[in-house]
Amino acid sequence: KFEFDQISFLSISLIIARQIRIVILIPFLLSVYSIILVTFFIDPSFDSFAKIMTSKKNKAQTGAIGLAAQFGINLDSQSGEANWNLTEIIKSRTIAKKMLKRKFDTEQYGMQKTLLEILTYNNEKEKDLDIHKIEFKAVDTFLKKVNVSEDRRTGLYTVSISTFNPKFSVDLLSALLEELDNHQKTYNKELKSKARDFI
Image (tube, rainbow, N blue to C red):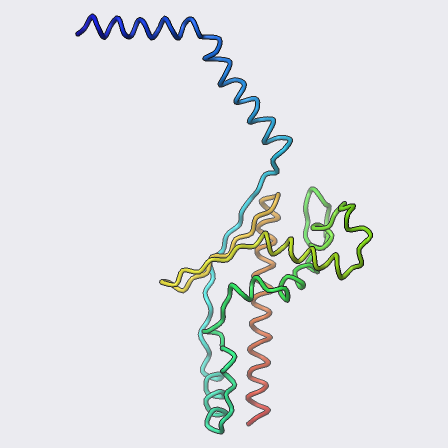
C-alpha cells in the first residue's frame, strides 16, 4: 500500500511537472482577464443600508381623530402613521422628484451638483428632450438604485441605495431619509389641521 501511494504521488507530480506551463498560465490569464474586466468594463457598486420603523400615532392626533369619528367623520381611513406602507412611499415618484433637487458633492461630477445633474450628466440621448422628460427618466434611474424590504416579524424596513461611490451612497441615503421624515411631518400636520378645522 505504501509503495502504491508513493508511486501515485510520484506519477501525479510528474504529470504536473510536465504541464507546469499550463498550470501556471491558466490562473495567470484568468487573473489578468478579471483585472481588465473589473477595471475597464464593470463599474464598481457601493451599497448603503439603513433600518427604519414607522412611528405610532401620538395621543393628540389619536384623540382628535377619535373625537371627529364620534361625529361620523373618519379622518383615519387613509391610514395613519402606523399603517403606512413605507415601501410605496419611499419608492414613490413624489419623493423621487424632491430628491432630484437635492445637491451632493462627488469627485466624478463636482461639488454641489443636483441629483438631476448627476443622473443625466453627459447623456447625449437626453440633450434634445424637454425638462419634464429628462426628470421623468431621472426619477426612473433613481428608483432603480433604491431597494426596500420589510421584515414582517419585527416591523423593520431595510432601505438600501447602490451607487458608484461609497460616500455618495451614504449621502444619498441620508437625504432620502430626510425627505421621508419631512413627508411624514407634512402629512401629520395636514391630518391634525383637518381634525382642528372639523372640530
